[in-house]
Image (cartoon, rainbow, N blue to C red; front, side, top):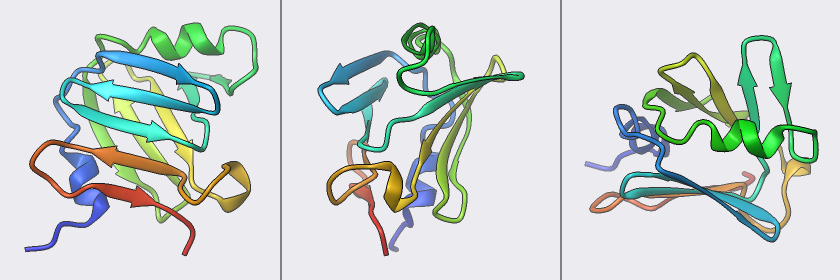
Amino acid sequence: MHESCNDVLRSLVGRQMTAVAFVMDYIRLEFEDAFLTARSLPYVQIGDINLASGMPGYRDMLCERITRQVTKASDTEQEEIRIEFNDGSVIAIPLGTDKYRGEEAAILQIPEQTLCVWRPE
């Protein structure tokens, strides 16, 4: 049976975010043995605070999600990938073609499952 990327993304639920890597023009989020590469730079939301790349406190807020457990993960009709955590915070990766460089917005690698790539249609 073929799984959609949204189904594979939901397999992040229950995993803990274990690392954030800032690599030149993309960010890699690690969830135990799963890796989500964001070519479209994510924003972080906690309550009314919404920080994007380049804003003061952005890197700290993103790194503070380390050790948090994923409670929900989905792509919202190809608009963004949303990862919600047990403290109510959200990391979201925009999927609009104007938001990223290259051919992909995001790549999800989960062992023993399909590699998922979000790119423009």
